[in-house]
Image (tube, rainbow, N blue to C red; front, side, top):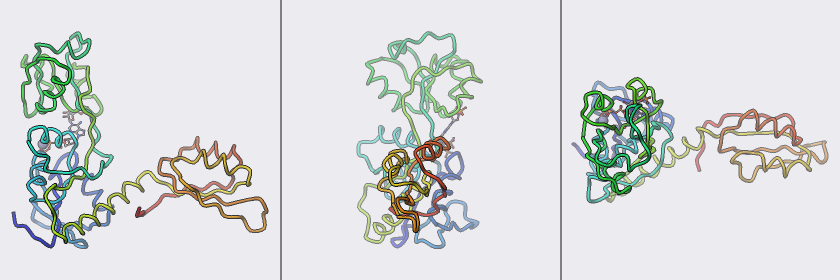
Length: 296
Ligand code: PRT
Ligand code: ZN
């Protein structure tokens, strides 16, 4: 791969569950992705970076080798890779809140299960052999791990294995195959990673800018700006109710002695129940507005 010392290289999934969400995050961070004919890379028009579109399984390798300084990949893929390497060639910079799933052990409905000891001597089909082996070792259980690259849920029916260990989000796939989850081995979501190799000054500066923008996007995704009026005696209670808001701004209302405007950034979702509680505490004219940009 051509290494351009003046541009940052970001590896994201080419096509699959994380590709649109990864592009969406970068777009929200203000990166304009050029829609070129070249399907393997894309230039960012307004930031010195290029995207590399690759298989998700290759992203940890690309980043560890330094071919790409940054990458977005599922925590599950990263963990499986890390367990198979001697040195940790990457650093996790942020959990991204999308691509959530759990890696779970499942078995046909009729299979008895009373904890990890029930796996002793069994065969477990999975695409995550390293993670499953670690789980077995942590639990002191001896079992055979059968590595499959796909269609893992068919293994029990084909009598390849009595158990499987696969990613689950809604659980519909397990159910459709007559399987029930018995253990959670790993909780996963997409993460932003950076190579552990030293970066040149240009890459380091670009990386810092990218990270602070992404952190800003993540902070605003759930955040809301909330405003209300309240009498002085209600302020203490109101501050306690506001979700994830530190140090609200309190401004005296002109011409209404003892009344204040309260403004705060809430770092968590603001539900109708919260508004109801604020009203009961004495707040009025409550306004909740979305935040478009934030830099922490
Ligand atoms: O081609 P490439 O190698 O890049 O893609 P891939 O086919 O290996 O991966 P892809 O696109 O399927 O998933 C990419 C990443 O999305 C995974 O590594 C996870 O981090 C994340 N993710 C989140 C999931 C799921 N949810 C998920 N449900 N990945 C896969 N699944 C599969 C699962 O394997 C099972 O077959 O969906 C099925 C179960 O879904 P439910 O909803 O029926 O439970
Ligand atoms: Zn893959």
